[in-house]
Length: 109
Image 1 (cartoon, rainbow, N blue to C red):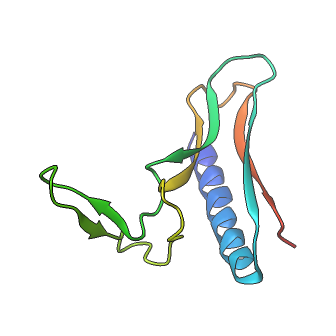
Image 2: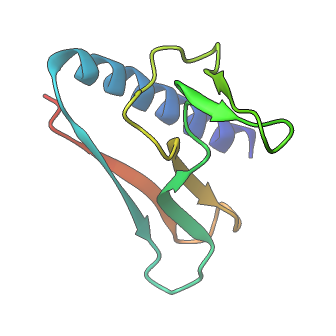
């Protein structure tokens, strides 16, 4: 189990580093996919609103007044992302389940 978690963490960190390098080179796309040949429905891969890096977002503590908000951990996010989208990759089944969630990064050399 621990080996799997470490492997997943390495993969995600490598993907982030690749995305950062690609961002400096120009435009790229990230296309999520689900590999679930036996229909277990125990994996998910999608762009999801509300889980991304908020840059110039607004919040309202009282339902009347709106205040700007940017996450201090990601101040250089995408200001054109109005839905605050983030990439969700999940596998809720056991590691031995023959299914996976992933993403393909296109436009990166």
